Length: 456
Image (tube, rainbow, N blue to C red):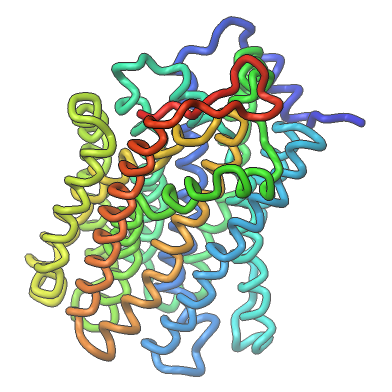
């Protein structure tokens, strides 16, 4: 049975046979993640500016936005399911087939939304179709986990792992800038009628092309001898989810809670404030989108700084410091976001700065806890659960609470994420201390590479 695709074969023709440099891996990872986050943010921005008017016109704008955020959450519920489905595809047909299917599904699901008729044309069926597309996006995002970030970490110099760990995270501000910039252009230059009629569809439509380009960039790394070698040494090989949970399920839970401060803040500076400003202030959506673009630049710089700082003090200490700063930031959130334009701008700039510092080292901070044969599957599911618990319902919860009880409850939500991160880091430290006092236990089937996981 064939285990390759035409895109994979084309990528192999231009790939190199020599050892892949960390810089080349980093470029492929950043391109791939930028495409994923572009789809991610195009839908999120559409949930605020478009869907309440196009798919939920039968209710008031606030209720329509809350309904839209309910549909928004579906992708995060579907994401771990997608990981498990595509892990099976990976084991049976290979990483190239898995990536091709996942990325094309992601791009296709996003592009299809651009052609959906609204509620006024086909009624409730439009909402159902939107939900199907959103679930498909979630399944695809789960399948888009390719192990390249792990390969990057394994090939990075030991004293620069924080630097290379932040590189995949740059995909978030880059994808946000592209999505936000496109929406800002159409919002500012079109009338509201034209924007809601056809202008909003363009960012969704171009998603398919962007994903094909990103897929090729990733495939030409996945098919290299270096990547295959890592697979053969069981560093990046998918394993049974049941076996992984039975052996090291506690590390999945720890890994899911460690980045909660970052992931809770993630949507509270991107999607939620856009909804708050458009619903409860006189500020135009176009001008606020431009402020968020500036915030994304600050976030990208902060992500780069996180790599430099982490290599000096360690990734976990930086996450703990960032969680503490996010807790302090939560105290001033109601005053900034609920204030004038200056306060809202300060909220975005400070929020993106803190997000960059924490998000830059959030992914895979405890992935080294996993034994080598479980690292690929364990890291993927840890990421899925982090997004589900920390970010999946953040816009819905934040808008629901703030619209009924005030912005102070947004502070409580953000503070809870910081507390979870600090608690998970403490628990992880205790696990490391306890594990170091025990002799290493061999992992069945891992041969000479078996042993206790290495903690960094």
